[in-house]
Image 1: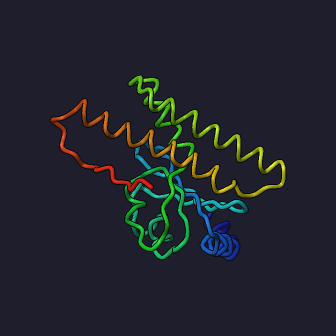
Image 2: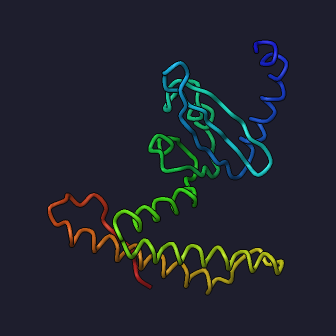
Image 3: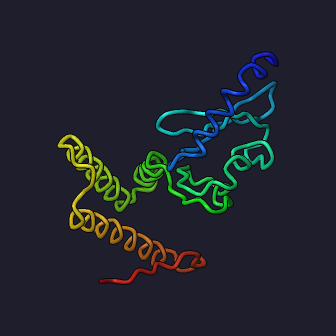
Length: 181
């Protein structure tokens, strides 16, 4: 194994350099057991390459993706793991698949109707994106985008309001603020 590590060092460095030059990097992790002890496999990926790391702790600041990405300035797409928000100058985006999974949980376990509305809106927007791409169009018209955005914000705004109306004793952590046109 040590020989493989030594022989692949240049190639692994090249892959990591390519990832760090990318505009968008996806990062995720999965836990596994080694002799009964928890460990983690992390992946940093772009459209063209992937880099795997293994750590003993999920939040390994010295040897994991948090160290590798600490100066990354472009877009990081992740699963809402709070440690990623500690990364400095990057732009954060949450993975649509993780968002969809959370929304499905809201539908399946809590019967939240707004989660179902949001799923339909996001799937409709994705379907429209694929239609446009099939026609060779890479960007949605501004009016169409704004209409989807408005529906999204209305669903989110109503959901937050309903939640706090139903749970008046819970401390308000998030205040919904948006200026209406």
